[in-house]
Length: 304
Image (cartoon, rainbow, N blue to C red; front, side):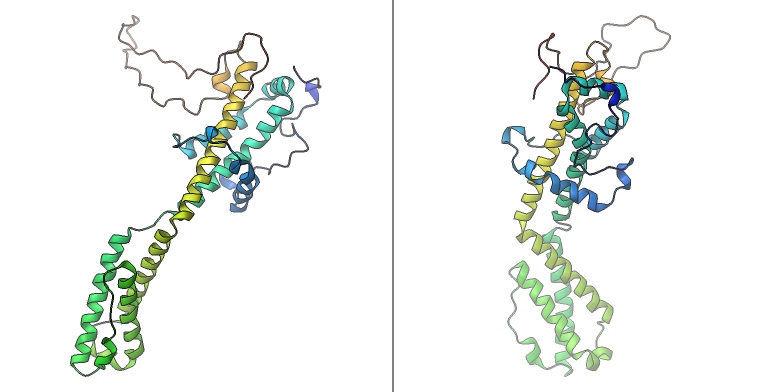
């Protein structure tokens, strides 16, 4: 049943004055990082409690494009449409409208957090660089031993080159040797301080890549959060789309007011027709919009 309230008292930006949602600036790109983090935290409990049947696996939409569509739709909702929605659905649509902007920020933050968990470099390729650097420095250190500038005992330690971690430790070991004796060998070796700095940087990148590889569980958690956040955003937007379709069915403009996030996906492009040809041919493609939900012929309002 429609909620009994005075539509004239409604304000487009204050349909729910008691809402605890985070205010959103006019342009999503102007928001600071903290607002996105706060949005994800505000949705954390809801996302964790989502039933499996509500989760898209895999996500089949572009997150950036979908979120921009949601924001554009919210910005374009007119006062008249909002009034119709509230008159029909009351607090139910108010909660959806108030929450969608936070849902967008939560999904975008989850996407950003997943990106930070991705490996920035291939461990195998880095290992080859580490091995090449190690062998070069070891060759120069061996030359210093042969010429009496470095005690041979310094190169007597056992070295493990059969694993990523072992090769990394071997590189760090030979760098340390050069650092320790540098004042006395600087003029006797082709190695430069810049070479040692590059070796340190390479070792740091290798250590970081190994750390990410060893903590794959963190990426799995971030991926799950992103999947849930995006799925929740899509479900909430589709809920709004169903409501708009119901109240604007006879006007026929629901697809313009709340366009489908899937519009254009999987549809074939129309053939080019000469503008001077007024006669359509049988093989021309007919463009159709992505249909919204079919109304229930006067029955009760849509329910999720």
